[in-house]
Amino acid sequence: MRMFYRYVIILNLEQPMVLWKTVSLPKEMLNEIKKFIEENPEYGYASVSDFVTTAIRAYDDYRRILEGSKGQTSESSQEKTGSP
Image (cartoon, rainbow, N blue to C red):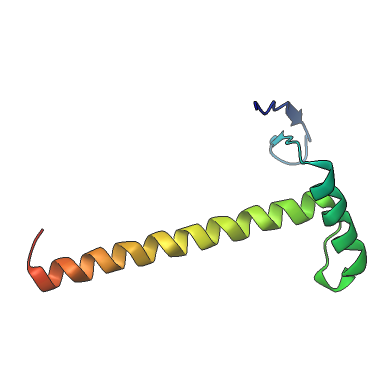
């Protein structure tokens, strides 16, 4: 299945140009996100976009942590074996 993306450029003369990209979510996932936002106002999500942006940033942070720990593991094994 191919995903189609639309580019939307928003120009605000007071701030630098911002580039937005839209994505499609399955309807069930979208409904779950909306329900979560409504039932959990303490998390402070203002919109589905806000939630998805936070989720993507959290995933990116998690991925970087995993990559960092993999790098540390290979570095420590290289130190033990003396290999480059």
